[in-house]
Length: 182
Length: 208
Ligand SMILES: Cc1ncc(C[n+]2csc(CCOP(=O)(O)OP(=O)(O)O)c2C)c(N)n1
Image 1 (tube, each protein chain N blue to C red):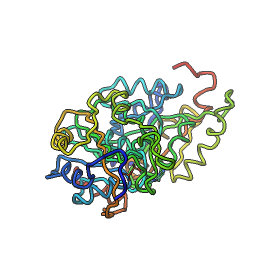
Image 2 (cartoon, chains in turn yellow, cyan; image 1 turned 120 degrees about the horizontal axis):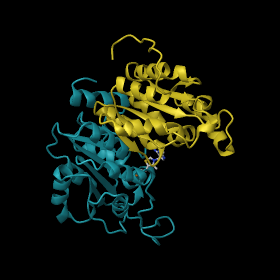
Image 3 (cartoon, helix red, strand yellow; image 1 turned 90 degrees about the vertical axis):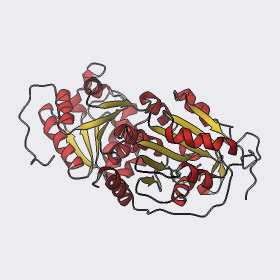
Image 4 (cartoon, rainbow over the protein chains, first blue to last red; image 1 turned 60 degrees about the vertical axis):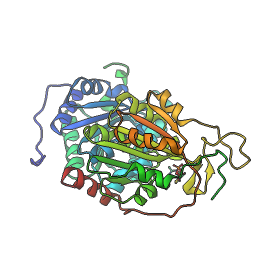
């Protein structure tokens, strides 16, 4: 990936399918997830392709050593989780800094914008602060037309720039009413 | 040497040395923090060793990510019972993928060795006020997670087969090895994580 960053042309695809395209463009081989309804369609697309291994985790924390191992072996990966999962990862979220390896995670936000479930607020509101405290770069998307460019930039910062990067897919983007649907 | 109420007789250092004997370019080793790190280093530091100095609970996940990325190499994870207890779920995740090239060896001294030999859950019940656990059986847990080839090794007569299984048997292979509580010399590898990662990739991939 040596090409200069370009603004990808606007796409008619659903934004989740656009993320899948970015994964393919960046040669991502391993996809880890604890499912979130907001990631459902993307997870399914990853499961269906032969070019990626898609793993369900028992806890989001597993995704970080998995990413480290994949990188040791020469493969790129991504961790998909919801904001509550970030709280499960904190100590191991230090690994990308300690080992200095590229790390990319996409986080569907809850407890963020019109959330109905009060249990989601503490970790949802804590998510950006926790990630910042662990030295993870934050990118945030609120509108569908910014998704592709943002995830692409995040992947470049991670895999070309060697950073740990999180993309927060804000609740405003995901849509409060859409939970449970694809 | 501390008393070993569990009756373990195997010593971890010579055992790990045997596990890593004649390790070549096709053996990729990850060791958990604490004693396992010092054990693999005592057997001879090498670029294709990834000894952890922290990240408790990480070795099995790391081994799985690596095993999937490098299906033609043998990946060996060596770690302690305390470390394994922190990431039991990762055994279930291994079982979802069934990597044929992954072996996991847990050196079970029934103690959090590094932090002062407090009893872990694998320690027997009713072993005295400061030494009681739950008799947790990590091999049974591994089998319950879906790793069918998960057994326990206790005797020196079983070590030759252990070495063969760990190095060559179709995986995933899980071996719980009951080892003595010992006070051993700290044999330390480089500590810098980025350096350890870069030298590993250089040796494996030809670039950092
Ligand atoms: C998250 C976390 N909790 C606690 C510790 C402190 N700690 C360091 S080593 C260790 C025990 C390791 O025990 P085990 O894996 O059984 O190793 P051994 O007995 O072989 O030394 C603990 C609890 C830590 N490093 N990280």
